[in-house]
Length: 355
Image: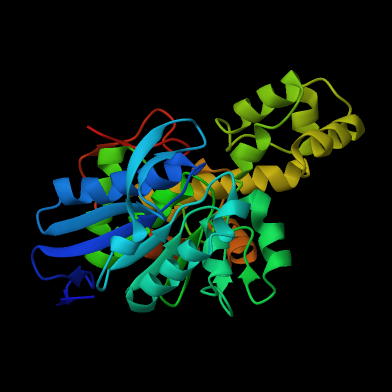
């Protein structure tokens, strides 16, 4: 990283107008968001931040038109034409990874560029290309949740983290599926230019700045959306707006007119977790979001999210996240001010937007 550290904010202070070359490697049947998500992050950083310049290039083995898995065609340059040292190598994922990992020419060029790159990264199943090129040997990595088992079985030298949004091991970063490429690119901007710079980009794109690399790919809210029956889905929707209410098994069972025994069985079958575990997970996610995006006190957040007391919330954070609410706020919010931002009507569970 070029530059120094601002002693007041402990954020990177980079030399003005340093241009950072980002090469995104892709192929036919690529997942288009694996390519365009990071491209938008780097493009927005260059447009909206005064001293930030990313020069991006999309490459394939042969160059020319590429057809993504969704049918959209886009242009690419031949990877062989990329010469000299690049800042960041990023490998996208896609539908036909068997063909991609069997492309020996592509793997050779990925190794060549990775040898001199400051950072080597992948989005989604792009991790398979890095692994096939030998770049993940002895490292921790992640990929799309549906492919983590295959990555683990195929490459014994890779330690696969199936729950992470992204994993940073040395100069290698790997991310989970599809939109996690946006999370990864924002993390790279923060790594280069500090949290405030990344926050500016996140606000422009109207996305969360922080979906922690240690958070599960499946949130409790997403898991709840898979419920089959309408009563359970309605209950889960109601629950997230009433976290400070009595959410015990008897209370929840009464709400959908089931016996406690029947409710316990149905809930576990539909949601994949006990009601108590799901409620705690949703309360925890809500608390994390409020810690990251508001100035509310720990006491206020504990009450709003249904923990009751800061001590109870603190014990839950330690048990489930191995941290404390204060440390979580310090790490994931940093020096980002919330002045000028207004919460939506459900600011604990939805995006914040500029006023």
